[in-house]
Amino acid sequence: MPTATHHDALTAITVARSTASLRDELHQLRAEGAKVAFVPTMGALHEGHLSLVRRAAAQGYVVCVSIFVNPTQFAPSEDLASYPRHEEHDLGLAADAGACVAFCPAADEVYPDGFATTVSVDGPSRGLEGAIRPHHFAGVATVVAKLLSMVRPDRVVFGQKDAQQVAVIRRMMRDLHLDDIELVVGPTVREPDGLAMSSRNGYLSPEDRRAGTALVGALRAAQTLVRQGERQARAIERAAAAVLEAEPRCATDYTALVDTDRFEPIECLDAPATLCVAGRFGSTRLIDNMILDPANQSQPED
Ligand code: AMP
Image 1 (cartoon, rainbow, N blue to C red):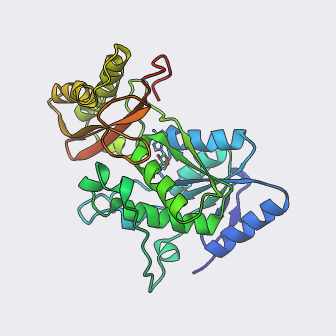
Image 2: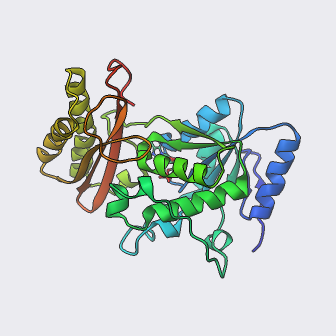
C-alpha cells in the first residue's frame, strides 16, 4: 500500500492514506504538545461536518478528520456506489475549517485481506435505524473502533444529527474501555428552512427537498406540545407523526421518543429524552431528532 502524504501550501492540510503515515504525522504533532481531536466522516463535507471541525479547532485541538466511505455500514441495496465523493473539494473545506490532518485510507487499508473482526453492539443498536438497517451499526461500530485505534485521539467528535449512532458509539467506547477518549457531540446544523444538513440531501428532487422540511416540522410540533405541558410519550409521538402524515411525499418510517443512552422507548417525558423521526422521500431516506427537555423548554431546539 503506497503511502501518499503531501503538504499543500494552499490548504495546509496533511493527507495520510496509510495508518503508518497517519501515526508518523500525529506522533510529530503530539511531540510538539498537541492534543488531537478526531472527526470521522464519509466525506461530501457540509457545514454540519465543518462545524464539528471548527469547534474542536477553536478549543485548541489539532483536528484530524477522516474521509472514508465505509463499505461495511451499507447494505447491498443501499447507495455505496453512488455515495458522493469529492475528495479534493473536501480537503479544501476541511483545511479552511481548521483541520490539520486528513486520513483518507483506501478500503483495503481499513479492511486488509483476511480481516475477520467485527464489533457488534447490542442495546442501543436494536431499535429504529438498527431495525430498519440490520447490519448498519455493526459496520459503524467496527469502523469507528478501528479508526479510534488508528488515530488514538484525545477527543472524538460526532454530530447530534445521528443521535442513535452517538448512543451506539458511547456504549461501544464504554464496553471496549475506550473511555479515556472524550466523546463530544456537536449540535445539528440545519439549512435556513430547518432541514438537517445531510450528504444525502443532494439526492432529493426539488419537490422532495421542500417536503423534507416535514421532519423538522414534526419535531417542532412535538416540542410545542411539550412546552404546553404534555408528558405522555405516545401523545408526543402522535403529534410528530401527524405532521409527517400530512405531507403526501413522506412515507414515515418511525416517530419515537426514546431514552437518549439506551435508545429504548419511554412512557413519560420526566427527564430529557430524544425524539427521533425518519421518513422516505422518493428513494431517499432522511432522519432527524431533537432532545426534548421537560424542565427547560426555552432551550434552543437541539
Ligand atoms: P457522515 O459523513 O454522514 O458519516 O457524518 C460524519 C459526522 O458528521 C457524524 O458524526 C455526523 O453525525 C455528523 N453530521 C452529519 N450531518 C450533520 C449535521 N447536519 N449537523 C451536525 N453534525 C452532522
